[in-house]
Image (cartoon, rainbow, N blue to C red; front, side, top):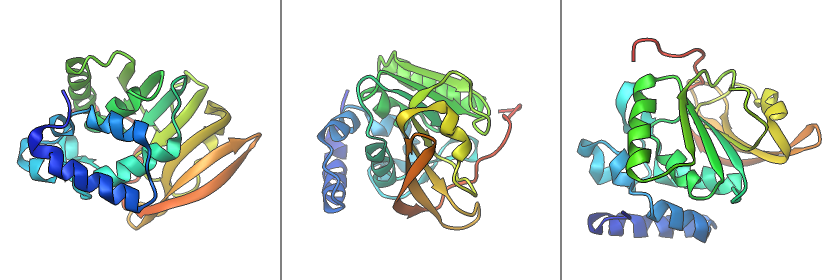
Length: 216
């Protein structure tokens, strides 16, 4: 299953936008093309499948626009031997894409409903190297170290506490800034005990919530 005929025009437009930004990651594009994005987007929002806008999903969350997702995954520089930790499973789309690039993806979300739905989608695609679990992303599961960490929720300050969970030379990508304002997606490369930081693009994501949801 790949990009459907009805999605090809949207996918082509997405590719042009990425190349205009200087992103020409053929492995990433192949992984995204091989992952049917429409299966992760609610039916009523399918016209926006390959758009730059975020659209609502279950539990009051959203699936981010494909441009932002591609920019973040490209910045992670995922290799085939890497273990990736994802904070914020959402629809499960980005975990599915990253699983085609990495050795293993551990993805966390505070909502049980989102985790269960993501597992169903991953199983339907035959993706066996993803572990999806309900957990508190603010604390992280102690199953590290990880080669790559990505967060889809905003931190008020650079999340330096994740340094201990990263391998040497590891990469963390996360939005940093006020929870109710515009944040900056930043790439942090671990060098010894220090982080080399690069600003990627502005975004507006929800602040990282603590704990797990008990009802949904």
